[in-house]
Length: 139
Image (tube, rainbow, N blue to C red; front, top):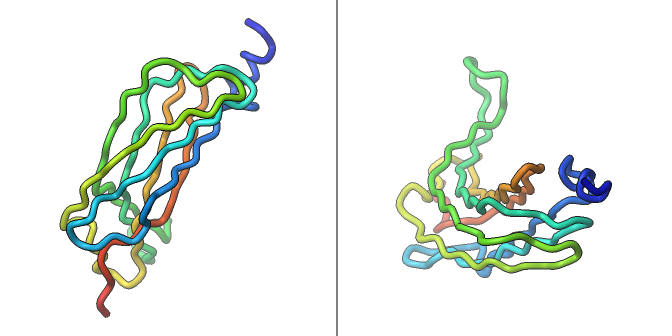
C-alpha cells in the first residue's frame, strides 16, 4: 500500500463533498433538485454509494434527554455510484427528491436539513449539510 493511499484510508487528504441545492426554499408542489460535488482529494477514492437524508432538526430541552437537539429522518434517498473518484478529480452527481407533508415545519425551533453522506469503501465517509425550507412556518 502506498503512503498516499494509507493517508487517504484514514481520512487524511481524503474525499470532500459539497451539495449545492438549486432552490433551498421550496413551496408545495416543487421538487428539491441539486448536485453533489465529489472532490477526490489527495488519493483515489472508491465510492460505495451516496445517501441523502432530509432531517427535521428541533431545538428543544427535554427532561428525558441530555441533548438540546433531536432529529428525525423524514426523507431518504440512496444513489448508486459506479467506480471511484480519482485524485484531484471532481465528479458531479445530480439528485431530485419530492417533498411530502412530513416536510412541513410545525415547531418554532425546528428546521430542515439536507445531509449528504458519501460512503467511501474502506475509508472515512464524507458528509455535508445544508439548510432547506419547505412552505412557511405560521406562528
